[in-house]
Image (cartoon, rainbow, N blue to C red; front, side):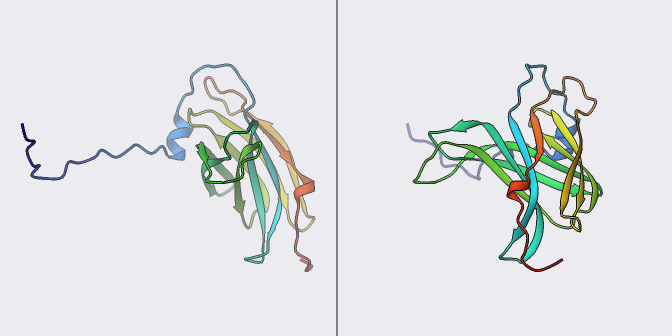
Length: 173
């Protein structure tokens, strides 16, 4: 029996994309706390655009040896708050595979003063840190790490200022 030729193109439903606002309101399921990510913050000089930036390097604590992975993220900066949402892991198309953690690098410009950094997982868990940026003194200070008041919120990320990765332009500021 032959199939009928369709008269119109079938509509494919759109996947629901979780925005940062929806993830902040989500209540995570209760589960065992384990540290999965480390967030390194440091100064980064971009030689191609010739601009001084602040880099947030998010990396997994697990080491992947079969494939090279990258953390896919979504981020935004509003007033004195930076939100970074962890969307998941994606495999990179590399011929050379080495044992390394999955990483994501997010760059921001023009940060000065105190900012609250929120790392948000897909289940709605949030880990936060208060950071103080001062480009003139060439220092970033981790004021405090905290968990926002939320049901079933657990610690999954650590924060550190990595002075060994700082890079500055050769010109004076």
